[in-house]
Image 1 (spheres, helix red, strand yellow):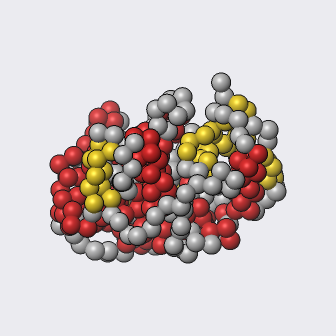
Image 2 (tube, rainbow, N blue to C red):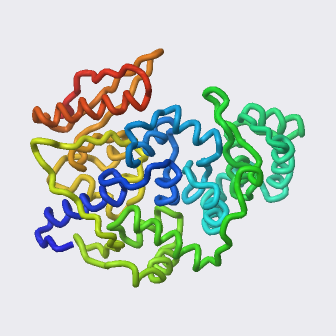
Image 3 (cartoon, rainbow, N blue to C red):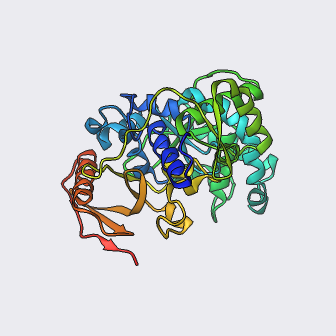
Length: 375
């Protein structure tokens, strides 16, 4: 963190994040390797979230949407509500120890909603008996299938109640994601898809989570880690203290930042050869940070409201520059973009190249629509 001038130091930190997040200098040639480094990756918008893997893989240009979905269907990567009350991808071997670390707080976070839905512990146990029976012996069930099973047992599952029933079934290690059925998500028996994995004490789990979080996302703050993993700040600090000898700790913009040096340094940007990344709105480059998220769009650089960062982002040389989304129609796709500023000719060419790469991933002809300039 040598640069002393605030914007230069911020730029250096953001460039280092791009390397640690494997958007630059990727080293893993396989999906599981990427996810293992990240320990958890938010997967709220499923199809967009799968795109996050080839973006971070060495040789990722050869990985298609079919490849990523096959990895999911085969259970190489799983999707569950761990870390925060939203969907995350995680490796099967990591899910048990992470859930046992985070589920107590996740249950408390969801407590008022659960009570409003009339789901006390006895009722949850009853629902889980039914759900376990529905998915036994390798059966993968859609939400509709599970509603039918619950209602056949006299358990109401309408009005949003099912969401809380299923989340608690994940926290209690009854259900986990199954293979897709067409466009429908399914659930499977937890024990049939999730191996025993390591057994950690809480302190060991905090250290493991902190180590992999810092290595894949640095520079970060303790509050970043706490919010990302639904930990208390005291827990986050315990995890970081356990790996302090492996880290460097510096100050940036009034924040204490933790890093884990591995020798990879960001390359200087070349204005004649800019790099454009099309990242999903819930990409880890956005969602991994709370206190230090502003590094993505520093004050005075772009007039971007914080909420806009949750829309699919266009990054030019790692800097937030606009939004994108795809429109899929039959066997074709169109990428629509909104920009906060006009692009140079090299930037326009880099954007077109990024859209072409995304089209290659989708496996269909993909066009770039004329950009909309945001006022």
